[in-house]
Image (cartoon, rainbow, N blue to C red):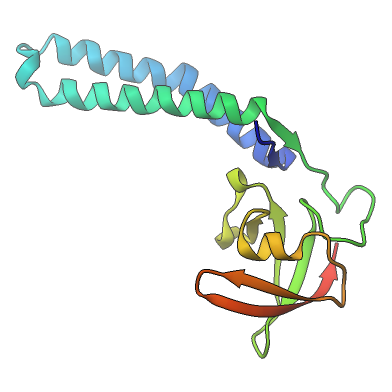
Length: 156
């Protein structure tokens, strides 16, 4: 079973979501189902179908989060812990591609990746390419759209 890398913040966020789904959301869906069942003919009841679909989604997400959290490995916050010269999951990295502006992001596990928040997956093309490299290295990144090079400017 693959390890899921999560920051402490990401782990806590998923734990909170799981707790919400198990308590509040399950209860809300159960109430919707109960109300829809009292609404008459179940075969033609759109609200009943919608509630059943939502229940299936909630239960599926609970299973997904249970597995994710059970296999999670909390990654060290490099800002508070020891510094590493090489890029690893949890590293804050600044890179530059050609004449474009430098970009800074944190390498996180796939479950927590959110490029808009500056978090990229260790399984993404850039993430995979730069893992294990150091400041000053120029690294080839292979993507479905082609290959390009990035220079590593800073690792924290």
